[in-house]
Length: 100
Image (cartoon, rainbow, N blue to C red; front, side):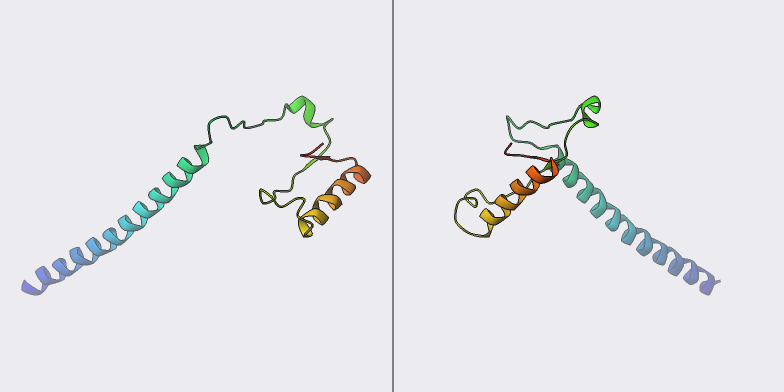
């Protein structure tokens, strides 16, 4: 009788450890998802989120966007080469860029 009670106590302890471990993992997942949702929903005041009109999507030229450092273009470095190359490719292949 004593061994059966001991076995049941060990089983309950193992189940509690198992559930506790999974509960900690679920808490972390929920925290990460909440943080992702918070950051995805945040925009600075005045920011505009552009959504294309589906009717214009077929006739619109593809848009090419390059994100630079704030003072990167015009410094005579490789950013200027990237800018010139993107603009040249846009002219040759009938693409839009964020500057035209």
